[in-house]
Image 1 (cartoon, helix red, strand yellow):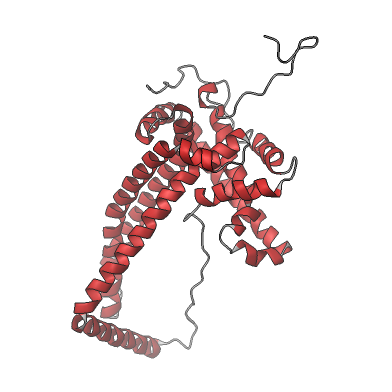
Image 2: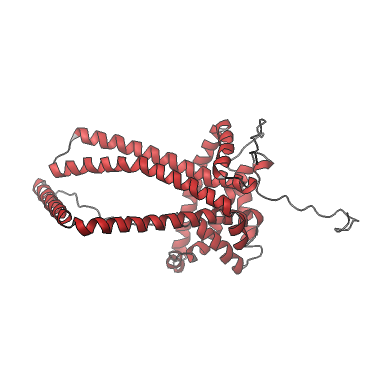
Length: 334
């Protein structure tokens, strides 16, 4: 099927704030009118797959004590300890390469297999959650089977994108790590190394931002096009790219407003956790935490759909409302 070309006549107005209201109304109507716990668990399973591997895990690192007691002598002692530990680790690795290399290869292969499995399930979940939100249904088997071809295409696209990002970013990370390690081993800062590491770090940030935006556009807009057209990911991306290049300012504003929404949603979730302390532990349990946060996740899926629908009916995933029967006629009449 040939992609539907973006309309040459732009809609009169595209708002980033207006879709918030219908998205909230969708959450209310879908999850609370009426409240159905069984529906929550079914849609929650689809949402769990859709966000599998994408949840942010919190973690904290210990900080050093950089007060007046940490003088030059202490710094010298710390540097010597680091060098000693580094040399010990290097000697240990060099004398045990016969089993370290196979172990590292095995661990890398297992992690790669796990990543591929999560990415595949996550790609299936994107269409399952979209199906539930767009049609206000709680179904698992039907969208799993119906959108298998599209989900597999999305998986291969995201896999290629992930490999490209790794090929570009990992060497930069390695160079930065080497520069920092060399400065630590020397025991003194190097202006050239600091400038180089800073420049590479800035380039790394830009690359990460570009790939993050590509991922967001893919999930928010390309997946709905695939859902509507039943097309492969690359074909849908070509259609969306035409719309993107025709409206760069609007989609830039969408990204900025999405950041504001994400901050607001994060604050609401934190406040909810503080008020309902009993749910804090439950939210850490896989799938259970997704069910508890289901209104947030449904809103996050519904908002870009309502925004995208402003570009024309060809981008509207929601079925039109059923018109009430005309007075004096039978609903079964032809």
